[in-house]
Image (cartoon, rainbow, N blue to C red; front, side):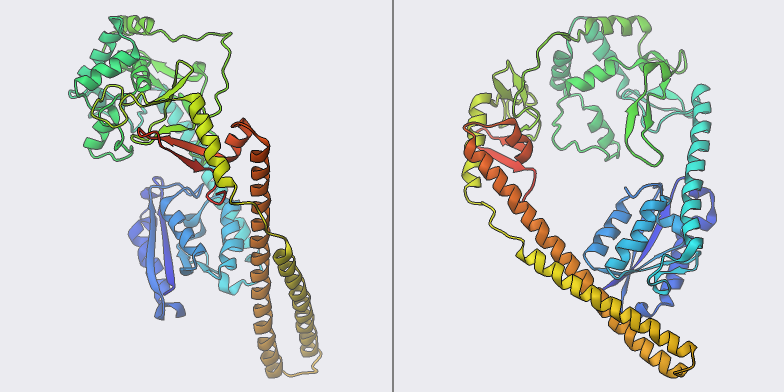
Length: 501
C-alpha cells in the first residue's frame, strides 16, 4: 500500500517560534492529508528531523523518506512550507521538479499553497522560484549573524562547545569544571609522560589498570555517539597524544580551532593556530602549566625530513578479521594487529602476516576470481531502447501539435466547449501514457548502457590481470577496498564494487 508522507523539520533556531513546533506542524499536515482523495486508500507516515538544519539533506528522516520514494512506497509528500523540506534552492528545486515527478510523487507545501498536481509541465512560476531563493538567503543571513554572535561570545570566553574534553564537565555557569571520575586519569597521563613514558606505554598502563576509554565513558553516561563495541578497554596512542597536547587542561580557554567548509556543510577544516582564540586562567585547571610543558617536552615525535616513503601496495587497506582494526606495518616486513598486543585472550593476539606473502595471496585470489567474469555484453539492448524512445518522442510531439490545433479550433469557434473539453481530456490521457513510455524507455536504455560499461570495465581488469605477474598499484586502486586477515592464515577481500566479481 502506498503512503502519504508528512515531513516535519525543526531546527534549533526554529524552536523559538511556536508556529513551527513539531506538534503544530503535525496538526496542519494531518488536517491537509485528511482532505486529500489519496487519504481513503493510503496510510499516513510521519518523518521528523528534530534539531537539523535545512541547508543540506544530510538528515536521517529525509534520507529515509527519499529511499522510500525511490522504492515506490510514497505517493504524496506534505510539508508545512518549502523551508521545512530544505533551504538550499538548487537541491530543493531538483527534488521537487525532477525526482518526485519521475516517481509520480505528489508534493504539497501547505502554507505556500503549492500542489505539484496543479503544476504539471511547469515549475510553479516565478513565485515558487523566489521562495526557494528567499529561503536560502534567509538561511545564509541567519548563518552569518549566528557566526558573528558566536565569535563575539568566543572572544569573551562565554561560548562552550557541547562536547567537553575528557576530564571535564560543564558547570552551573556553563564553564568547564573538573569531572571527579576522570580528572585523576588525566593527571596520571601527564605525570607518566613527564616521567618518561611514551604514548604507547601510557596506553598500555591505562588498559592494565582497566580505566575506561573516553568513548566508553560517554557510552556509560548515555551518549551513544561512538561505537565502542570494538574497543574492549584498549586506549589508542592517538587518544593519549591528543590529551597531552590539549592546553585546556591548564585552565586555558581554547576555541575556534576549526571552521565549516561552507554554510550548511558538516565538513570542517583546521584553522591556522594564529586564528585560535586563547584565554589563560579561564576555568579551573586539572594540571599546572609546568607539568604540561614538561610532559610535552618528554613526548618525542620523530619526523625525518629526508625519509623516503616506501610504497606499500596494500597500505591502509589491511584489517584484522577478528577485531576489525587496521593492521600496522611492522619493521617494513609484516602487517601486524597492534590493537590486541596486550590482550592475550583475544584471537588476534600477536597476529601478523608477511607483506610479500599477503600480496602474493591477494593477487592469486583476484586472478582466480577474475577468470570467471569476462564481459560479454553488447550495446544491442541499449540501442533498441534508445530507438524506441526516439519513436515515442516523435509521437509525443505529434500529439502536442494536435492538442494545439484543437485549442485553435475552440478559439475560432469551430467546435463547442463541451467537445473541446472531451477531446482535450482524451489527448491528455494519451500524452501522459506516451510520457510514461518515454521515461521507461530512457531508464531501460540507461540501465543497458551501464551494464555494457561495467562489462568493459570487467574486461579491462581481466586483461590487466592476464598481463601482470604480481600485484600492482593500479590493480589495488581499481579493485580493493579492504583485505581482512584471520589467525588461521585465511584472508577475505572486500572489493570496491560488488559487481566486479
